[in-house]
Amino acid sequence: MSLLFTPLQLKNQKLQNRIVVAAMCQYSAENGYATPWHFMHLGQFAAGKAGAIIQEATAVVPEGRISYKDLGLWEDGQIAKLKEITSFIKSQGSVPGIQLAHAGRKASTNLPWINRDQFGPNHENGWQTVAPSALAFHPSDHAPIALSITEINDLIVKFKNATTRAVKAGYEIIEIHGAHGYLIHQFLSPLCNNRTDEYGGSFENRIRFLIEIIKAVKIELSTQSLWVRLSATDWAEGGWNLDETVALCKILKDLEVEVIDVSTGGAVREQKIDVKPNYQVPFADAVKNKAQITTGAVGLITTGKQAEDILQNKQADFILIGREFLRNPHFVYACAMELNQDIPWANQYERGKE
Image 1 (tube, rainbow, N blue to C red):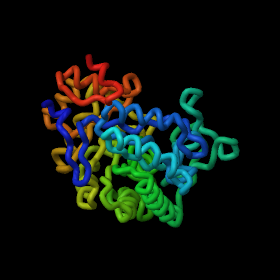
Image 2: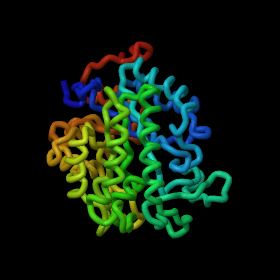
Image 3: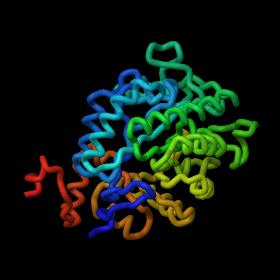
Image 4: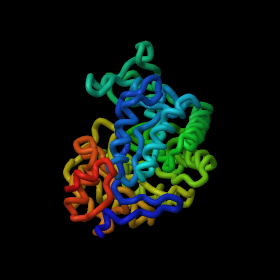
């Protein structure tokens, strides 16, 4: 049995294999509510036997959405449709997860297939953005408003409340989105955060917002697995870096975070990334082996052999796949055939093995 198809045992969950669908925004919600598109999109990966499926960045407040078509979990009415999705995922033997998020200064944008322009607060599909500091991501963006201490405390409660709803909706993995230049990452990075209070300046201050969110949301969990997605580097001079990421992950482990989902970048436009296959794997390797925490690798991983080699080299504990699942929703089946592994298929698709 290849490592890729060896089950991953977490404290209270068992993934049937080590291939996980990474969170991928679909920009297809209605006022934050899931639509049939989300059921189809996430359900197809479950039918294809992914070990776990992480639902797209789901905003804890309306203003935390990247676009006006993003999913949300800021009110109880949004639970019912999500519960239909998690129930189907579980019925297929996969583990449902959700990524709770706030986009911060990168919110209020148009749909990406139109353009990625940011709408102003007076636009029908826009709103006023917020951030740790009043620094815009792009010169053409509308500057965010710096959050007050009261507003920061309120957002921590919003993450907590969204977690309560996620548990009611049936998610078994709760992932806090601290990567890709969204709000939590904006606090972490000194390139986005120039505050002079207890949420800015030192490493201890810049991680405070995330730490307080973790302490709040874990109270709402019973058997659910708590994950954090981090950008391990800003790929920019003077930005958040790998050493800080490892130090943070050691703290998160002590706070009972079970898994770190390691990505990179997204904080600033001046980032310089050498994009190539496995370009983010060394960061996952460092987190796994220096922080001694269960770690997922992601980024231009497109074949079963590539994924298997990462696991064999002990650079990660599992593999997160994004775009390749968009190209082939049954990527798990393809990996199994590539690695000559005989795995159960969905009964309805079994004849496709012949």
